Image (tube, rainbow over all chains, first blue to last red; front, side, top):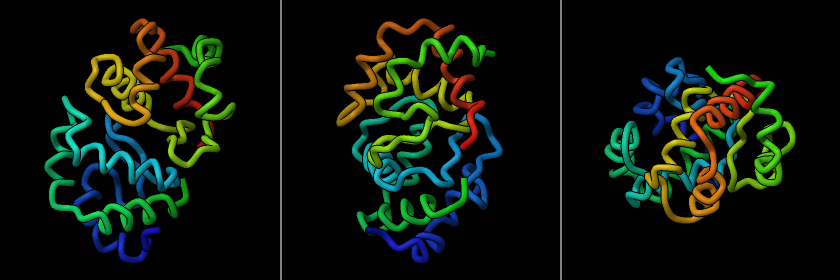
Amino acid sequence: DGAASAGAEKAARCVACHGAEGKSAVPLYPHLAGQNAPYLRHALQAYKNGERNGGQAEVMKAFVAGLSDEDMEDLSAYYAAMKP
Amino acid sequence: DGAASAGAEKAARCVACHGAEGKSAVPLYPHLAGQNAPYLRHALQAYKNGERNGGQAEVMKAFVAGLSDEDMEDLSAYYAAMKP
């Protein structure tokens, strides 16, 4: 399992679209606060694997390209722990 | 915009994985309650377009194959209106 505390530091690039508290101000982007960590981990991996394409997926692919497995686990734990 | 009331009827097939109140009991699946409607609409369309692949995406592709634009809008409105 990831460490939410480590995720907090790694989330700096996520904030612009997904909000400082995991609530996206842009309706086309998903809220992340309180989402299931395994799902978030899966989604990040899917972007990294090129299994999600089109539209904003291209933005996500660029962001996740540099993330390690540990980074993705930490970020997932961080957002899952937030109040939805 | 979709009609949440119409979405309620159409969501019968969503419940098994995403929960009767949009809260998934299976951590690999996302909660949908309170998610942004435009994002939900986008995600459904992406599955239908074949832009999401691998893992559980194959399940979603099968479910969305028969959905019309109106169905997807109603379902998105339905889940967005739920308490997260």
